Length: 284
Ligand SMILES: C[S@@+](CC[C@H](N)C(=O)[O-])C[C@H]1O[C@@H](n2cnc3c(N)ncnc32)[C@H](O)[C@@H]1O
Image (cartoon, rainbow, N blue to C red; front, side, top):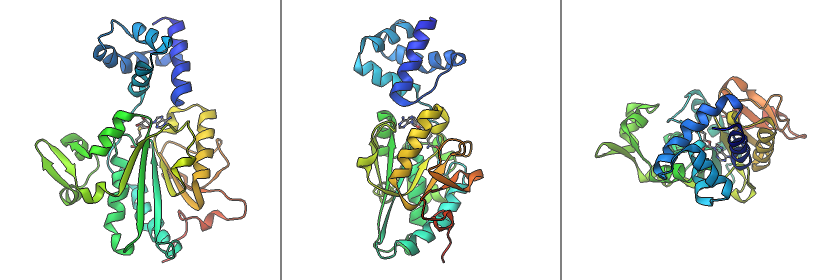
């Protein structure tokens, strides 16, 4: 690929998704785009980039899809989900008792495993929330990932990544070689294709936001923009979960660290100490 093509493509993907590609990532660009080159029966990555440059909107959308790293798994890193179950959910029960409801956003949800892990965590303690209106929302820039998430059908390899056997048997049924998630869990989650670079306000407010293993691909300015938008989506005592290798430190002052090793932060509000966050309080 010529240096001009690389520069054009890197700028295009940054503008569209926030993805940052440095020169040493030429191989990554080519590897990720090659399957699309084959699917579209094009001759080369150069031809694909020419199409993107000409403004072919279908090709542009497919190229952005192709560039996204979508690796994920059920209960990824495990401990944040233990924190959700043992700290945030009990706090929500006390703090939202009068309202009897709460909303959780999984931003950059990929093929749905993260949002469904949240839903299964809530379901396991559902006796604490009788009659509550609970909503989990999953968004991702990739329409293909959102379509897969909405289906809720996973192969053997996918369910083996993180799902304990008893949870698999409790919430999934075998469908040929795959495993289909129960309607009970699926009905708790809504998925929507959404770009984090766009206005997030129409999504409404959330008590908890997970944005895990997404910011790591973005440049500093885009990270800051996204974090500020997420801070505005959160209610005053809201909690944010980032990936274990991600941080708000040195990026945004809109959050306060609760347990940075686990990627857990409180929305920062001038008149409210972080100790009153859902992520920190345990009012049992
Ligand atoms: C590595 S996956 C992480 C999935 C899940 N959060 C987890 O931690 O397992 C990153 C996801 O972020 C999505 N993503 C990247 N940039 C995005 C953007 N600008 N808007 C929305 N989603 C984006 C990708 O499509 C991909 O599905």
